[in-house]
Image 1 (cartoon, helix red, strand yellow):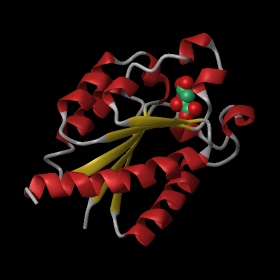
Image 2 (cartoon, helix red, strand yellow):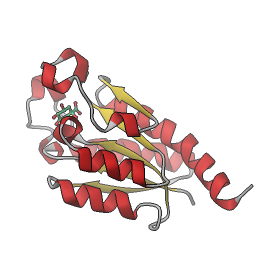
Image 3 (tube, helix red, strand yellow):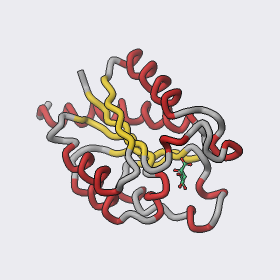
Image 4 (cartoon, protein in one colour):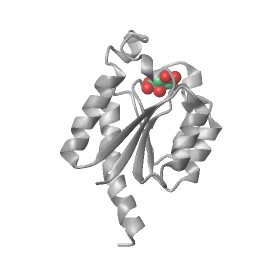
Length: 154
Ligand code: DQA
């Protein structure tokens, strides 16, 4: 079964209680459960990873091809706007990456308008709440099929 990695960046473990006027009351477990339901219907397997530490996120992206992942959905959270290391990790691996954000980062403070990570990704989905993740996973499922075709040389 094709495997897709879901990466949640810093402070997303606090969803549910964190700035609910922006992020709503949905928890990270709720988001993961919705993703899991979509994955089951689509016949793909998911692995979930949340970290507040940049290097841990860089490490898991760097290992992702060797670990058998065919696509990644990432919400880099605050690292979106600061992390050249995560961008370089995305550029380095032969795995397609979809960037997602719950809020519309272009509607918020100016420092959130730039994503350092997005130029290394296939695309970005921003502003649809939990739906951003589900749209991101839908894209990643298609991309993962292409990855597997390319890897098997067919
Ligand atoms: C976020 C947007 C980021 O600017 C912020 O730092 C986050 C969450 C989002 O999902 O809307 O932590 O990535």
